[in-house]
Amino acid sequence: WYQRRVREAVVSTQSTGDETGPHIYYICPSSNFYECKCMAIGARSQSARTYLERHKDEFKDVEDLNELVAHALRALRDCLPNDTELTTKNVSVGYVGRGVEFTMKDDEDVADYLKSIEEEKAAPVVAPEEGT
Image (cartoon, rainbow, N blue to C red; front, side, top):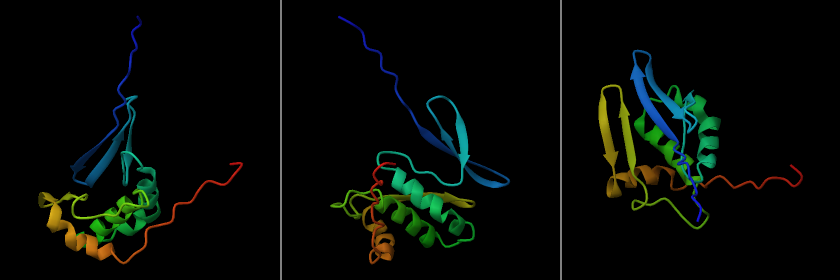
């Protein structure tokens, strides 16, 4: 008999705000933390982080909630396997802001958001080149 020890790897993000506005912190299992402009976590999240990093400058001046949600859905869509699509059954949208209570949209409440990105194609998945 032997005992196998497994350390749980917990990765989390934390949102806070102060007089300068909202902040997002990425907290590692090693207890290091980093302030981020945008973040995606979870399985297959690298594609979403790449999308968010490429478009983060576009978020600064956007005041339309629908446009921000569309960016989030595009990032999420880029993480999906090829045979899966975003639907009202597998997407929920939550948002909060200055003067706006936390709001969660599910099922049919998400349909309008999905329609806004429906016609766009998902970004192609690029395979790494050989020898890199």
